[in-house]
Length: 214
Ligand code: SAH
Image 1 (tube, rainbow, N blue to C red):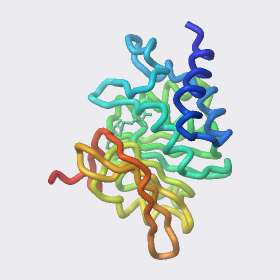
Image 2 (cartoon, rainbow, N blue to C red):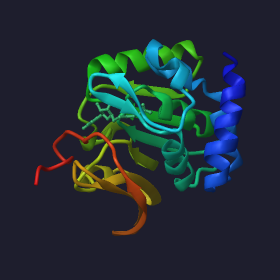
Image 3 (cartoon, protein in one colour):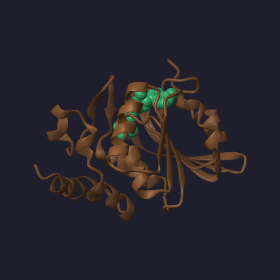
């Protein structure tokens, strides 16, 4: 299989026609080998237009959603980004292609270790991963220019707002465990502004400031 051809096709048929236009984002999608982040039996589907299972009952998001979240963060390349929900590490790699440093937190140790090993193998030197409850953030490395949460939450975790720089942006799927709205949060002095982007479905953010069962 010619994976680089499949990547090009993914960008041309799934991302550009739906409005993804940031050159840095499109370039990252052409570079990152998505097939390396999925289980062997899913490799042939790696560049298709849907999410895939990655083990431990978790999923790697549909390419378009990864692109939309990344583009919405308005990245210039100099940022320090915090990611909650490393999962396979695919979104982490996309971010690492674009920004200066990526700090990523995954609550399931087996997934964190697997992603860390793979990202090292692929040569990324600007990714730092720990396994703990990401809703508490990463105090020692704060403040962050951008924060991305790749699991569904019914609240914007308070510690993460605190750890975001003024004029910083945070994106998350906000809603119930069944359905959410991709929401962009901007911190302005002591207040926040929110922008609803589109409907989406993610696995739950399980933690102290994550999803609450309704
Ligand atoms: N961005 C990932 C997809 C992640 S799926 C990718 O590209 O593959 C969501 C991930 O969030 C899962 O791996 C889940 O274990 C993790 N997660 C859920 N609650 C969490 C929490 N409180 N802290 C850190 N990670 C969490």
